[in-house]
Length: 141
Image (cartoon, rainbow, N blue to C red; front, side, top):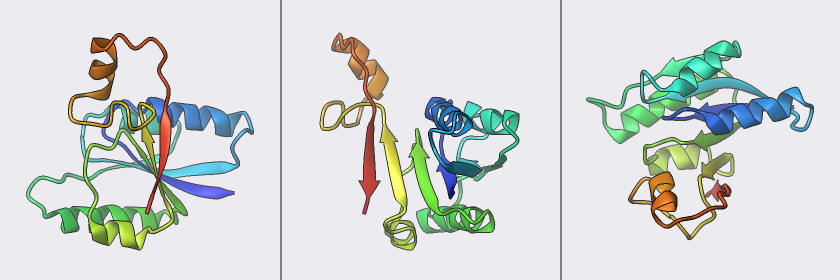
C-alpha cells in the first residue's frame, strides 16, 4: 500500500475522488497527511472529516526554501511515499523537487497544454464555453 501526502490550497475535490477510490478498493493507498498553505481551505476540513492528519503551513514571512522544508518535515513525519499536488497554489523549490524526485504527481484541472495557467483554469473553461471538463495528471521531475 502506498502512503500519500497531499498538498492542496483549495476545496480538495480531487482529494475526495482519491478517498472514494481508496474506500471502493480501486486504489491501494492511504492518505497519511494533508498539508495546506491556506488556513481556511476546505481541503483541511475534508481531511479532518476523514480522520486524516491535516496541517496548515503558512508561507508568509518565509523563503520558498523555508516553507518547502516545513512541508517536507510534515511529509516525512507521516512517512509519505508519494506527494500529490491537488489544487496546490504554490510553486515548489528545486530543493523540494529534488528531495521528492520521482515521487511527485500534480493534478491539473484540464488536459494540458489547453488552459495551462495564468487565469483561473475553471474561469477560463467557462469563458471559452468548454462543455467537457477533464483532468490531467503530471509527473513532476
